[in-house]
Image 1 (cartoon, rainbow, N blue to C red):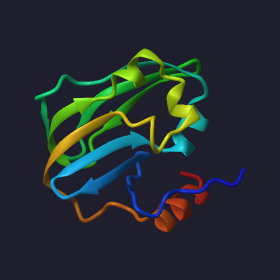
Image 2 (cartoon, rainbow, N blue to C red; image 1 turned 30 degrees about the vertical axis):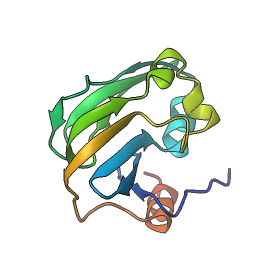
Image 3 (cartoon, one colour; image 1 turned 180 degrees about the vertical axis):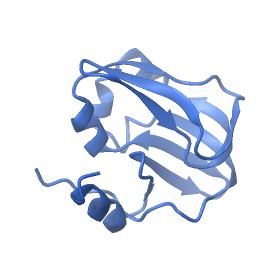
Image 4 (cartoon, rainbow, N blue to C red; image 1 turned 60 degrees about the vertical axis):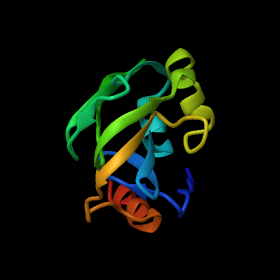
Length: 128
């Protein structure tokens, strides 16, 4: 299956995407991860105001196949959660990079190991 990954986003090896705009970032999970999970039935996301370090678990996504942890790509403070995604998790599969965002955060620092779209695509082609 041919997939495309928006060039304006950064990606993690844990299959999250991040759109960084100044000190604010929007975070979601990639279409590849959504397709691997199957039908998503439940999201557990943190509360607004919670702080996280890069690489730590910040929630879970439950599908008909499994429950997977979500890992924060940057050190940050949660400023907004996508209530629409919580109420209707199927919106992630419909529009992973727009309506399917999970959280918005105030970024404290940006790790150097985030992947570009082409690097992420090569990563998943390697069977990851």
